[in-house]
Image (tube, rainbow, N blue to C red; front, side, top):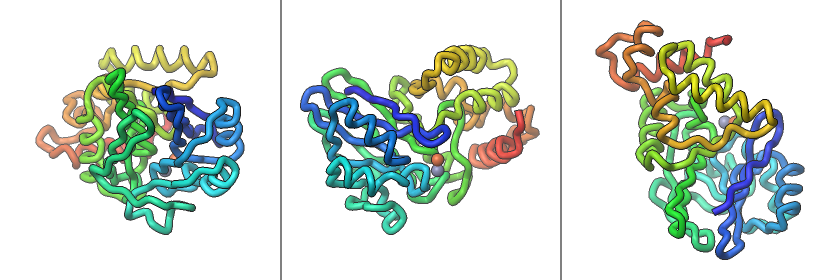
Length: 261
Ligand code: ZN
Ligand code: FE
């Protein structure tokens, strides 16, 4: 499996997923038409499908123009996003499976940021690699704002992504990593894994490179929204020791919404 990140808009990423065995490819989130079409043509690829992670314009704004220009046949999204994803032809839910050449894809409904958010979990049986396309639900070192869902939904969605396995790689919808890590450092100042992730992210950004992709094991070590039981985070934010996970996640999300670091 080969994955190309395509920078779009201010800080969005679209992706090209390529099965190297068959040469087949697909796009994740056609954010805007120009860069996506250019990237596919430059790579000599003719993606058959667009996999949309959620209905927000910065993720689907290029769907129709990209489909026309590249001859894309199918636009995938969650069943509940019917009418909200331009050009959608396939309506998926948790546990649906399909293939891209030799690659095996499974979808997982991950409500929270929006109610129709869906993850594409791609496994390459030849290498054992797994890639997670998480949209705006799980970010490197963060999570999306709760525009439509509840803290409990976001918590369950993030846990379902973490459960895919420690080695799975996270391909998210935005380059928010450095800002997310500043917040992670603020709420958990003695977490050395956050310092290491910050150094890595700074070095990559200084070279103009994406911080994508981290592994789930990195996220479990650094991401405050996967660390809702951390005593230090709870102390920093005044979350009761006995508060349940979803309540803690809600408090961490509120603190991040107001964080200017
Ligand atoms: Zn979004
Ligand atoms: Fe977004």
